[in-house]
Image 1 (cartoon, rainbow over the protein chains, first blue to last red):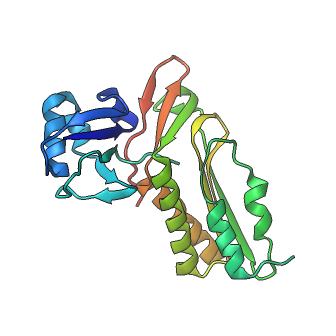
Image 2 (cartoon, helix red, strand yellow):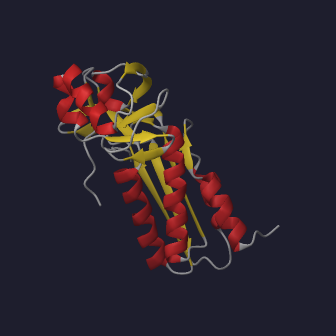
Length: 80
Length: 153
């Protein structure tokens, strides 16, 4: 199924924003993370430190992603 | 017209969030001068001209704006509640911010200075640590570097 990924900050050095992405139905966030690490092994270090958000809420690794969801990839904050 | 404390608090939370414009200190401070507020603290986080021995040209900030605004307002509301503040507001700028310009401002007002300081520190620490905002440092030699993780909380 198709989802949209929005990476931020240094994650954009590895994935364009926004990115249309295909994952298996009923995939969880952890499976998306695994898939992204396979596609871009060089991004694994930063991806493992990222949080994920859907609909303006942070979600856990076990959250099931729905078709057409927009998943935000959020690296560690560095504001201020 | 004098605002009640509850409407002043509400107005302050609504003033808080993300802006693409230079931060107007006076706009954030103007509502704060109420008779019951004896201690007012304003923190301004400004762009330093050096980082790790390199000359900084400017910082570029980006955010997940919808979530960042929501979280800043929740942090401000939590501080108002926790310290029983008269007023608190926090505004973070995104886009390019030059040296000596303000990237983030936090204002807190309480009957006494101690609570105003503590609440202000709470707000800025949580904004830096939790809120999805990122800085990219652009140096005068043309190189750039994304900011590292905050360890302040």
